[in-house]
Amino acid sequence: MIKFEANGRLSSKAFQALDLQEKRRYLATRDAKEKMELIVSDPDAKRLAASFEPQEFYWLVKDIGETDALELLELASPEQSVFFFDLETWDGYDFSEDKTCEWLAHFLEGGEARIHQLLKRLDFEFLQLFLSRELIVGGGIGDQSNDEERLAEYDHTLDGVFMLTFKNPEHSQLIGAFLSMLIKLDNPLYTALMEGIKGDVDLELEESCLRFRTGRLEDLGFPPFEEAVSIYARVNPANFQLEGDKDLSLIAEEGAVIPLPSQDETLFFRALAIAERPALVQELNYLVNSALVAEGQAMREPEAMGDIARRTCGYLNIALESLCGTDEEKAAGILRSERLKHLFQLGFSIVYQLHFEAEKIKATDPATEKLLGGLLAKRPRYYRALDPDAVDAYREFRDLADVKRNTELLNGLIG
Image (tube, rainbow, N blue to C red; front, side, top):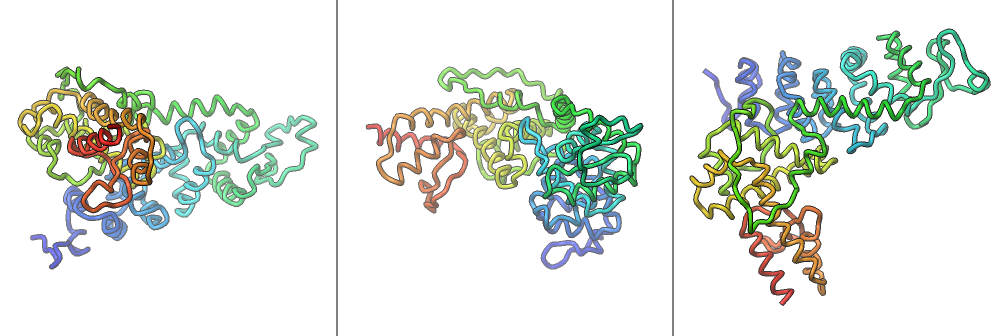
């Protein structure tokens, strides 16, 4: 029999006695820091950490904070580690060597064994792209150097064959440490990378890296950018028609689910509970992933990720309220038959009507300026001074009452 402490928690000893599935179920009830403590102290910590989908593990680390989660990062599987590089080192189509250095430094903390695992999983093209941004390489096998190479002054050589100059002095110590491990752990890979950097085909490398990254993210439920931004295509709420063309059998019922906002008593969450379809949760997961991809950097910021999850659920709730009023059974039926993306577009379009109305108004006082500032944002936001707690901040729209409150204020300002 499992014994709980007085506060309802399991002792470390009791937790460690559970099987893997029981551990995962229990961890799902704990906050991020307690999860980390239980995982890193577990005798089978690596297996337990590896049981998390890459995106689940990533969100856990981001929730804790990278610098506070170094012990947890050391347990990351190669697949989880690659996911970190996929999300952290690209901003849209732009590669960031600074972010790559930042995350490489975290993984170097794990020593040679950690880097050896990572080298087996990172794309050759990714390593070549990264190092080509950090190094000038001369020399090489056969020493067929041109006059420019022979006369150049280089900073360093690790093997007496390739001559190296660091392009970014602030990264030189990190790059030097990484290359020292690389040449020891996989000399043929080091040689191939140095020869490749001399070839200097940066643009082609970047395109290849993006293609491989997109494929991996798609496998994990993150759509390409072009598909992701299509969720924000506007529809005319007055002429909106349900299509009823969803086939739930085509939606996978397994996979990592993003941390959703607290399941409050909104029509959307009540209808979701009535619908009782695991595939709906996965469809919701894909929709939130789409919104994250569309926002770019939001995928790397826990607070922004939470806002986007709340926005997604808010738009779906607004759409259902506009279609069903308070009828939960009708709303559940719509969730079963209508693509969530289509409902999201309706909810977004209803909210965006406020943006168009706000464009007609010129602020004459600070409060109005704040109200309009939220509504004129690319993704309109609700000014919390309108809430009972009157906080001078913004949040996502939750329901039709939010929309109506803003509509009434705008009508008063126009009239």
